[in-house]
Image (cartoon, rainbow, N blue to C red; front, side, top):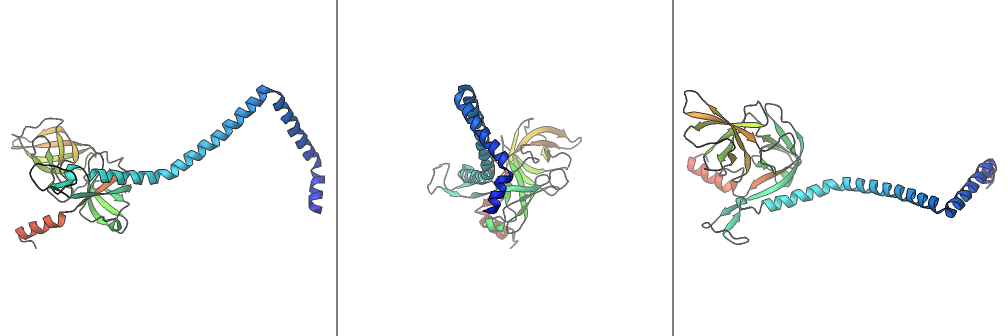
Length: 277
């Protein structure tokens, strides 16, 4: 109590001035409509600014959760596409019946580290064996093919992208199903190459190249790129193709790991036939 009295004595002049100032300002704004409205507008603008900032902060922190939900929804929708099913009978397609069996599922993931300018490039994903990711699974993005899972831990996976020396992706020409292997010469991350193409195949600049399917990594028809250049090989019966890739590997963030539900059945049958068991 004694300290409070000493404080009031010490600052009594300031307190009296402050109280009188508040009193005078209150009378002033209440007596003048213009000033009162300006004061109200200023207060409203200030409050609105704080509300907007709070909303933006909340939106920022909830954005990650929203993106994860969107990825999961996209993966479910992609799994309903016709190319994700194995056809069991004829050319008839029905939804939710016994004529189609689900062959491909999709695990949404985010790229947490990457390279795209080296000779051998990779993506690190934030999903691993705990989420069902395995070595050898294909990886795609909304724009097209990304690569193959090369290594995996409990919660992370390393993807060997198309932009890799050892990469070889089974592709085909969309218009006539001619198929080859796509590789990369290490020069430009916007382009990949197809070699040993027969000269008599009708090919034009702008033709679309997609995944062939038939392997265990990718469904048929996933976008790869378009023919950008036809390269003649003098004195040979084959030509080369420069493929403008659909994916911008410098800007990939969300991807889907492809899970082939029939992989083991296919591989076991092929090993049994070739005697590799």
